[in-house]
Length: 407
Image (cartoon, rainbow, N blue to C red; front, top):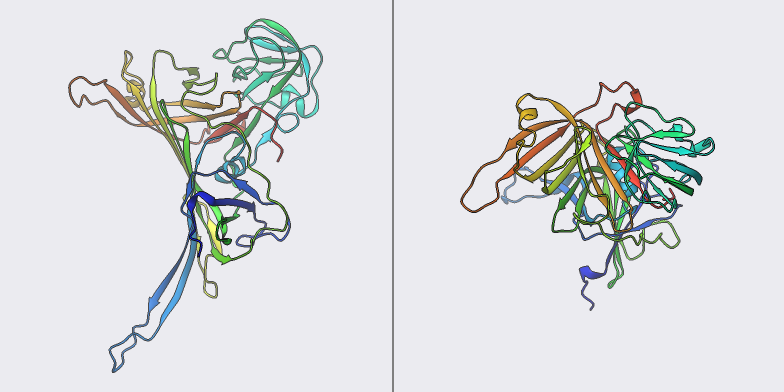
């Protein structure tokens, strides 16, 4: 008898059309994970009948639920469908799959100018105020640098005015390509069928109706970027053959894992500018959809899954320095924008932005001798209702910058 090993477990998934139903056609995707806790729970009640034997006569299932988490190390493009599931929206890609048509560029410190008007999905005018992007193939010092569209001057078909915090190096570049794709919170709640294959014993478990509930990311100065996706689902099954549609699953991406120090664009932004003179040791992000199961008679397992109020937070640990790092903003209850980056060594990555955030807690205790004084902040995301552009009234943006990513 072969005993199974966790080292040979493969997880894959496919997006559902109907909640709790694994599609009969389509292609599943293998997923890179560091661990999982997928499970199926049956709530059972024991009969309370009275009898002469002082014994229970029945145990009956009354409720069923699939749930659990997938743990991962962050890498480019691998988890985009799950990021879309968490934010309940889809990436809007610039150009083709996030890469624009090549153009001849003139760079100044404050602008990027195309020699001819850009058009279609590669038009500069499709970029939004405050959107992040990178350029490549210009053969200038601007390749793979992080840029941001001005929040006050809209792009034209030939000119992008840059945010003051992301100046360009002066130069010209033929065949320059702009890289950008943006995801923001929405209301398009998806569900997935997730399968665990135990390869060495040929067993398969499927978890259906798995709706992304929450996501967390952990970034530290001396570690890989790690995270977790949590799900609420409807049901499960087990067999000796796969539950996914016939065919070979799509292989996982092969991009490098990101760390707290990887990439040339590693930064924390606050109040519309990169932080200088402040050194962060760790940052945690949490995004929760507050899901709830919707149960009904004649159905063992949820008939629906409802979404609640978004709760998004950043937790920041930094060295205390002059300026007291946002203590006055905390005391005066002032809101501000905050953002952080996550990139690999090849310039592929993400920018996570809270356009309106409130410092909900602030602590800088001196716990003992011979220690660095640290400040701990808890930042809560709010809906940016004050934005003059309705489509930018959001809780979070995730900008994807790098290689083209096919849907």
